[in-house]
Length: 116
Length: 111
Image 1 (spheres, chains in turn purple, brown):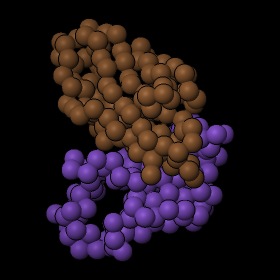
Image 2: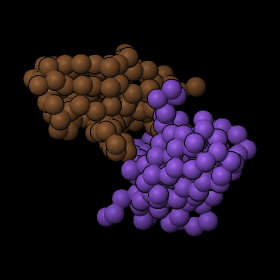
Image 3: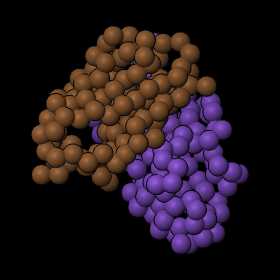
Image 4: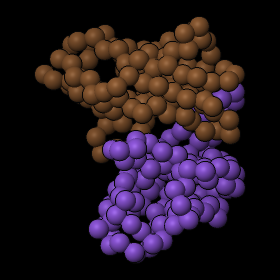
């Protein structure tokens, strides 16, 4: 199994540019999560989907951030326009709940975003 | 709401020392509990888990026991290696399939 796939692995862009991060969850998983990790704030949940439907986007920092999941095998996280404070590692994770709270999540390798 | 609290890091140990990383939680109901590990430059990966009270999760020499009476899930290893240097996250399962993570504890093992 290929695991969760994220692209690109590294992204360097200039302030004001649009950034799109991509994620392919593990086949058969019906939940997908986007996280952001920084030294200052640690690991933050931005948004998650169940069966392609956004369930909780309360962690999305502001309107510049948006996420979509057009089908079960693909999701995007977009930042428009990007700002230097968006620099972080963004992780995608997927899971397939199997029972009472046993929601093991499988993480991708992350995208390291640098906004200059 | 549900929350997880871990001991502050960084923790620095010599090789073969005993490791304890404390984790306590606040939750409604009976969540499953997890320890994840993040090696440098990588994503998080599951280290061990426990799904009910008094369960012990174990993997790679690490252990943690689900203690409902003390709402704790402390991570232990009898003899750490340099290769165990990583960041360790305690987490609990929450409604909707979410995980609530602690802030992470960085472990550095010196030869």
